[in-house]
Image (cartoon, each protein chain N blue to C red):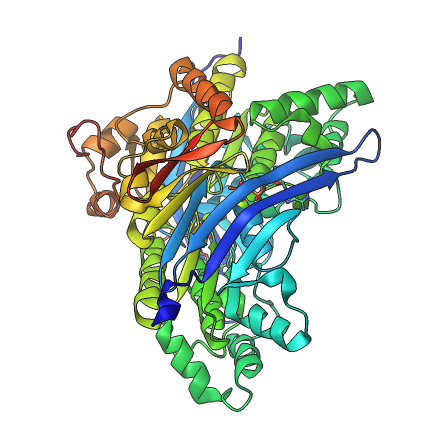
Length: 304
Length: 274
Ligand SMILES: Nc1ncnc2c1ncn2[C@@H]1O[C@H](COP(=O)(O)OP(=O)(O)OP(=O)(O)O)[C@@H](O)[C@H]1O
Ligand SMILES: Nc1ncnc2c1ncn2[C@@H]1O[C@H](COP(=O)(O)OP(=O)(O)OP(=O)(O)O)[C@@H](O)[C@H]1O
Ligand SMILES: [Mg+2]
Ligand SMILES: [Mg+2]
């Protein structure tokens, strides 16, 4: 099928500038994204990793239209999302692309049962398939107990279970792309593994595409075919995850890789070695990216 | 110098219950541990084992339906369970502070970052506007956020930046004990390491103790002097980091270690943990 070759999502030269106006003093601008290019193939996962504050969530929020791009285009299945004009198409897009956030609690209404959350979502997509059986089917699909879960309220579920409900909701509206913003970082190790396994399964069996935003590169290796590394609003390295995480070529990715906690190594108060090295790498990585160099097939690093 | 051997914090036979419709649920039971001056004590254990419940109880920030049923918590030898409201207010944040779990959502959404530092500083002593600004800038710099961002509101900062602000706020009044409940979950490993090194540097300079709660065992081993392992509301094992890492006694501790995902180290194939 020709469709297989069309990226489900493409970001072309996306720039986003925020303006902050303090009560006193002059306005400040924050260049959250600078000329970002990304692409995601249907049924695959792209991991977006990088420094805190580098623009990862901004990318996610622009895809779900919380923010408009300052310049550049976002293409979903080949068409520019800025061109979506009528309400019906807008609705279709909002269903096709769902966001799952880090805090599994924030996106669920504490006053409503899980049944209510799922039925609402189901009704949006298929008004005549929002019955009890459909709720059960979807709960089953995210490995939640279909008998006991519907009557529960969000606070009666653990963090991992709540996150499953968020994925169930995305399934209920028949999403094709899930933007998952740090979906596991608030969960403990064993639960994190099971949520990752769920995402892996949704991708493999349902053909869902996933933009997986994370600061945990170990989990990127597990889930994502491709990985892009961001620093200060720019993509500094991207390509197959095995290359980018396994054999990073950009100095920032290498730093990220080397800083993964090693239980045998104690942190020291005066470890200026690490801090000063990190400072140098940051300075070098903040420069404007002038081009991408292909290190290996499909594996690119920024030229700065 | 007030150097002495009394632990800064002593927790003895603590039992915390949640009152539910049915029988009360003991989320923490028979928990005893000390935190010494200048010590980092790590607390680990699976989700729901009672770590945050202990953290809240230590600050006396536990709210109904939580109830301290029995036991004692002593700070510098005085039982904090006897503190009246006034004393508690003066004690909290200036002597003991806390970084809450999901701290990125604990900031006041309608107040600028500067406003939040200002509130904290003003509540605990007379301070000029100039000093407030200088102190805020200093604290933000410490956690790697440009000082000019003090005018931003929480929603204008990234998740990790908000978590760093919460950490900076907890350090601002130079307390003697800081309870950190999963303080770095929203940070990348580089920033996480820099900030924790900075916390350790500050500890050398000022002297304070930390109760460090995390589900990241590798990180816990890197920063803690001693580690307590919890399961089902109880501490099943407590010892020096060295002992917990290289020679765990309890089956559960061993199970936790083996469940830890290890990223293949490309550099050296060093000896494995334990
Ligand atoms: N609404 C906003 N107004 C102003 N600035 C913003 C806004 N949203 C984000 N920013 C800024 O844009 C930059 C990128 O933020 P973003 O949330 O995308 O980072 P991130 O990579 O997701 O970081 P983290 O890993 O800490 O979540 C930050 O400097 C942030 O302060
Ligand atoms: N308000 C509450 N009412 C009833 N039970 C509660 C309440 N808050 C917590 N619990 C229960 O108390 C136990 C301990 O919870 P706590 O939040 O202390 O765990 P934790 O170790 O911090 O877990 P996590 O790693 O997920 O943060 C859990 O079984 C939890 O379900
Ligand atoms: Mg983010
Ligand atoms: Mg907790």
